[in-house]
Image 1 (cartoon, rainbow, N blue to C red):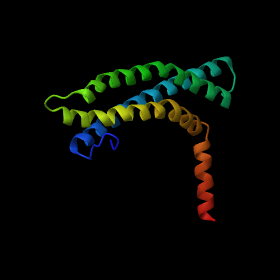
Image 2 (spheres, rainbow, N blue to C red):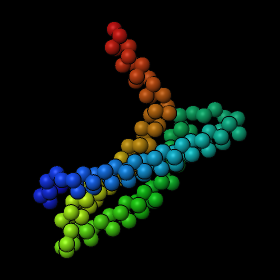
Image 3 (tube, rainbow, N blue to C red):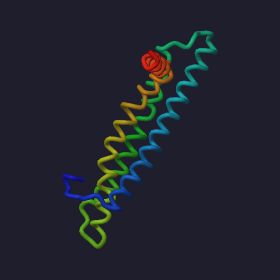
Image 4 (tube, helix red, strand yellow):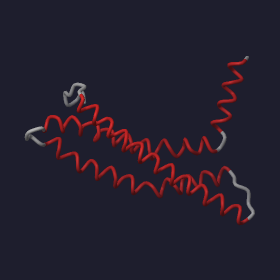
Length: 144
């Protein structure tokens, strides 16, 4: 926004709200894919009589994340392809539309990085018990 010389406006905020909706949707879909892969791996391990290990957890999360890469990239490309012409428009109302499109285009890149690089390790960390161990450690430090 700064690079294009846009000041904060209602149209810019509308673009951010739209970006939040798309980012939340893709994040939830990624979590659903990861959870489905985790449940399938867990069921397979129970059917074979093996215990579910940390390696199985990592394998399931990798499987779920890989299944989601192509749909996420296709979503980002479709949204950006639809919004880039708005940045080049010069007709009536184009200034307002540009201010809505700029946060969406820039935010789709960061949303993609978040969905593909941050959510899977975060899920592995929370499902592995790392989240609980960290909270317990922080609580012990605050008590003593």
